[in-house]
Length: 400
Image 1 (tube, rainbow, N blue to C red):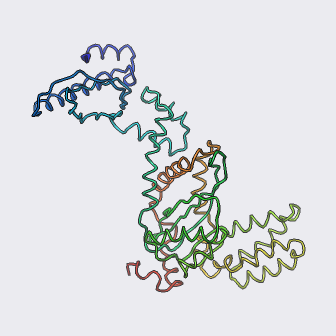
Image 2: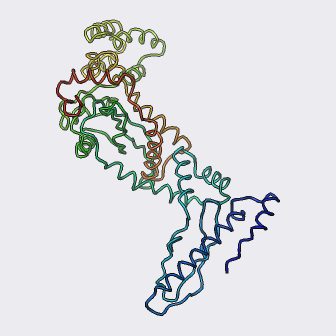
């Protein structure tokens, strides 16, 4: 039987320093009483409208979460079992989604389950089990699946692609898997993550499936794809987007080159390499590359050959003005997204399954995209120049 809420006792309790929220908080009793009174009214209305003989049949008790704390709710029952309460449905264990939203918010900031539990306990005076937190965060999974299949714009002037690696449990052992992030720049100069793909391997067949997915979701043209030497990507993109220009990340090429240069020579080698990638024209860059080879080719043929073999895709940016060069000659834009991912996952050594990783990264994406409301710097100038360099390719989406 419901105990009547005593306002005088509540005021006295507050004066004595009793908490407002929490299991034994002053407000919790009031919410309990109001909820049970509403459920009783629902049952009485149901019985009054029943065509067949029916009557009350006691009540059942369950623990309900609310924004003021947990409490034991007595739900009235009827003899025939036809009563379906609406205020708090039969399988419902929360009055509002406020706590769920708090959990998702903290999860998206990379907080551990233990820290989330502590904060919920501090705020609402309730202990939240790990299983419940996991169940709440699992609500992101169908949302993630829908996001991965959403329609995309028809044209993206620039797309960046890069990988970040995590340990994920599979068949009883932890293996390294790459998360490939596709970051697009739309026609308005705003960043948009087009896809998040998890895989052990890369190659032309894999990239073909990723690019086919983009095409099936509405992408008809990409002007420039900026990548970090992904195996098979340049070949695969030509089959789906044959006119897309591929630009290899200069910064990654430099980092990889320096791994094979002796530490005592790195400073001098770097000084001679700088005129190559900072040259004002492609012709000047090639002359600087010749000079680099003449000086260092016998000592580091592997490095020089790497620049020579990849030169077609490394040098694409030289044809563009400075504003466009800054945007495309590195994958810094997508690496910034990966820095956010690392902040989220720094307390996680490994993940028990793919979904546990992807739902956390997706939560991070939701946070990051809230800030992507403005176009990149000098976008109007970049777009007008791209429209000239790629004549006719953007006509269908430009409002001119």
